[in-house]
Amino acid sequence: MRIVDLSMPIAGDHPRWATEISVTGDLAKGDLAQVTWLKVSCHAYTHVDARRHMFADGATIEATPLDDLVGRCAVVDLTDVQPNEAIGTEKLAARGKHIQRGGMVLLKSNWDRQRSPMTKEFWLDSPYVTREAAEWLLATGIRTIGYSFPQDYPIRLMLKGERRPLAEQVTHDVLLRAGVHMIEYVANTSDIREPEVFLSAAPLKIPGADGAPARVYCIEGM
Image (tube, rainbow, N blue to C red):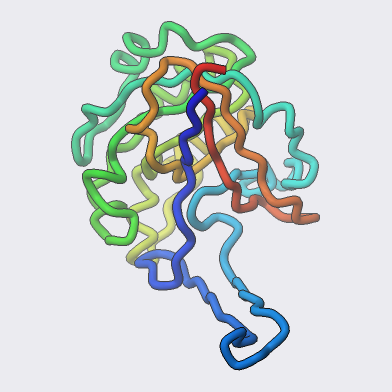
């Protein structure tokens, strides 16, 4: 078996997220313990969206079934994706023939190797999923999807403080609306070798939250 860590490291100096990391206690000075404090958005870095993120009638993160976030997962190879590429139905259909109804899917790219998530270019130059592709994914009957790049075009506009209507946030409007669980900003997917893996994306159990950070990893050969 082989384990691949698919989580971004949480770092304080980030172009999109205001993250505060502080430490109290100094072991070198004789303090009993060191304690790290973290203040971060539930939608920063590698995380799971709850349906409440966009829809008032949606479940919050602690009500999201773990059974839907852990299990066999089809890996769709998009490692040749280009900057600002609109990922459409044709490419997904050709490479996602092994997607199973009721299953999980992970869109594998090398985007975090082309542009570091710690730079603005990661967001500004990102490939993105078209509405037609999101509708095709929904039609496959998946229950969960993971993205290794900022998957909706308007995400880049948030760097400038611009927020676009839900209809333009196509994966949220099409997939999350229909109850498909979304795992966002997965990293290191280019290290995955197999077309199917065992994936775990268990989010922090934060009562009432619309999402939560998650330590995501996959196991090959299981």
